[in-house]
Length: 395
Image (cartoon, rainbow, N blue to C red):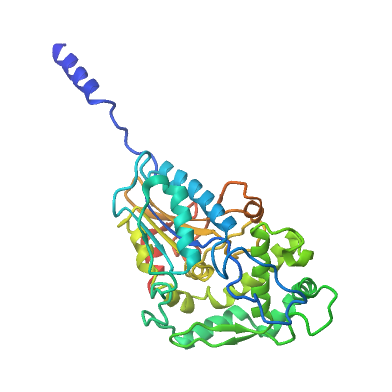
């Protein structure tokens, strides 16, 4: 009896017995995020003659993160940080250990500033080191083709684009998009007569080379750029009279973002293009997927998002945008789950704000699960074995 009492006392001093984990544990997370809201990258925004009137002015230089864009990213960071602490990837009450978080940003002002705002929201006073080259110095990790880190197989790329275009060719795509072209021309021109508008040049694609991605020209190219500018005007909270010169509604913005998504479907998502163009970022993604860091966060561009989506077969829809159009500040999130059996599986989601939340400056971020379409042996719930995800990233 005395012996049993001593054992019970010892157990009490030792604290509560830890039960075995009943469910999966998130071991690490890899995130690829688009920069926040920016103005057009050129001034003027588009060549003369496309719009009947001057494009609205912005409060920052071309291509820079706007004030509204920084605020939106910071709110995303607050939500992300709370989530990462809740799932145990970040410590609950202290800064993460050195080397457990890798934040990489491209060298554009908008990507560096996006990283800074995200870190301010997610990590508060921790002041993490952000890995980036000096502003405007080309980073080979984000430009692997021109840097010679990877090469495109032009024949394979041409075949993949032909398949994406479909049997009716580019002319068939222009016919399908004709009602949207007409609506965009009405916004661009108002009552002005031709030659205002997108013009009549049919959509064409310049083939890829070993060191250069394929390039779009013609109506779809111009429409994609113009539609993205209108979306950014709306997201940045410009007065309604300045969004498409007062002629573009929220419904128009959503419908016209189809152009942007269509450009990526043709030229960024096909695997022979996506894998080499993503090659400079793949090692950082692997850091997060293989648990060499707890969090690997890449601040890049919409093309990077489309590349990874194409490689893994991911699809999403942000409220206010067309399907698969990468939202400003939107991110592909890949969680590595260790199951009770020890097996490691990957769960994918798309994290973003709705277009209205960006414009209003209110509203929490949204997280939508995505099936990993490239997974050959998916597990119930949309999970994919880690080895298959890593394999999909390989050339």
